[in-house]
Length: 216
Image 1 (cartoon, rainbow, N blue to C red):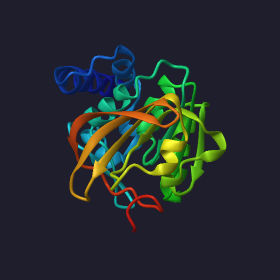
Image 2: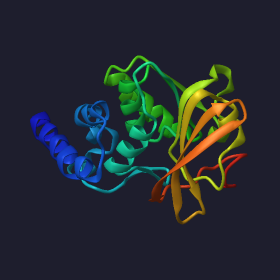
Image 3: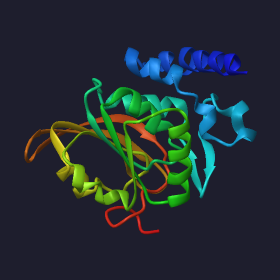
């Protein structure tokens, strides 16, 4: 059975990621190795490696593989980063980040999702992840600054606390726009008050709910 999923992951990388320009070999290897099907309910295992998002309960989704790879590649991880993830969701993106970062701090406002993700990630043997049930738009100040921050929900604007918690040279990847479509952007902190911005194209995410996001 696992051989079938291994082949599905290979196919996903070859047909969905590489043709769309994902080049980072470490990102491709992580996408090839993390068992995505274990982050959705068993009834959806047959869909797990297809080119679309899937429901994970609580009106939330697991992003399509390409978007996960694109956002991860945009972070430019070298393996030694402290990475903050806003929106644990199913834990799939968390697993990808954990393979490519020294330590991952992940924040999820919906406690049942966080509990399920923590269980799955523990069963897979990840030991470099810390979890917090909290308003993600406030970040996780206690462990700041972060070398990389990723936000897996669409925001009306970039939450100020996340910019404040970004280390010098740090990268923040976030979808910003209205509730129906967003632009995926990367903000890099060049100096204390100097940020540069790069856009990666249109996308659509669930709402980022919180004090510095959308109101529920």
